[in-house]
Image (cartoon, each protein chain N blue to C red):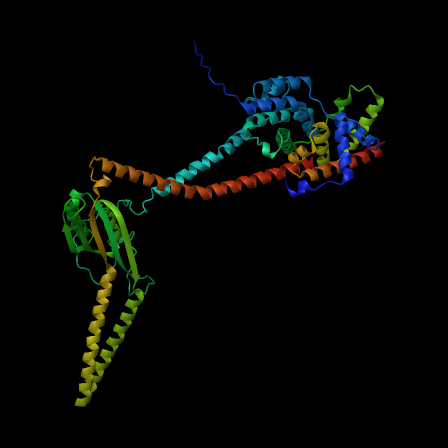
Length: 175
Length: 392
């Protein structure tokens, strides 16, 4: 009888988890960061930086403090806000993100609606725009939004509802 | 879950938020919420999408686990410069920040070691003092000034009566117990006599005995000039291992002052009595004055004696020195026995534990300061980030 001894393989569970999270959230993180910064080039840098930080700190994730998505978006938010601070110290950039989002649209009605919504979004405050980005561009749930922003769940719901109501009114005014 | 999180939203708000979630999830919504659902889908359609080049480059980096090269490589892959690439100085500052806890820990250990090896600890050997000049004890006048070269460590205040200085006059007594190897008691006792003489003092009383293992020893009543006490004790400490040292002081400034005042008064009275005696014409009056004069002179002698004794106690310190044989189990005598080795090991462990305790005592406040600083920096950074969002 031959015995084969296999060396136990060390499985980096946090790494595997983060790789899965990357696959699920890559575009969402980019969308959120791009909405926050209003600059494609910076958004790419910050998105990469956010994932790099997340990979580096993957062992620090604590599931009791929220979901992995909320944790990742918290890192992305900090990276984006740091970039905003740096940008404020240098020069203000002109937002260039939204244009390519509807270039391929073939429906005139839809295009008009998007133009209206975009104009309405521009009238929101930065905090309100961030809420919209977290909800509609990053696709976060309300509890995750609460975690990312560091507020209670009901507070996040209230803020979100208030922002959407304001957006609706702005769209109606635009129309 | 906090109390805030338990707070329920108004029903209408809940319904509308659920309708938005349903619309975003591709589910049907009630007719009354159709405009809201349409807005949600329109807003979602404005979602920025990453370019294919960026996605490919990022995927490649993700496959490698995001190495340390960071987004500079990404910027090169994308064929453009990184607009947010940090300068070298900022990266260095970040490295320094990450090394801060290690630096703090090192500092704490350094402080702990410094405290642990401090010579002021009892039981330790004193720092070597300058060797005495070897001069023999010479008779000194009352309250003569202490030698300048030996004042270091002497707590006796300069006894300058006439100067009217506010210096305090202290009477000191000291005890010193030194552990000496069993076979070195005799030679150490001889050294005590030599050292006492070298520091201007003398051995008033001594008792040296010898015996079996752990028995015997020597006791001395050494009188030393107070000004030389610290230097003498430091020299005596080299005879062996200092086991205990005790120093008692008694402020006699007021006592000396009152004796001096009493002496002055008595001397003035004696002068007055002498003048009255010279002028006395009657025998009865002269006899009374002579009797009073005798009494006053006796009192003057008493007070002068007390003053001299007190002055001597200020100038000289009584040192009760005892030489005790080192325990054979302690290994200090150099015996290589299991008992001695066990004693050594116990002492080393004891010292290590003491260093740990001292280290912890030094590190704890440092850790609290570092933690407070870290929290303050984190709060400040969070605030600056939120301000950046508001200002964007």
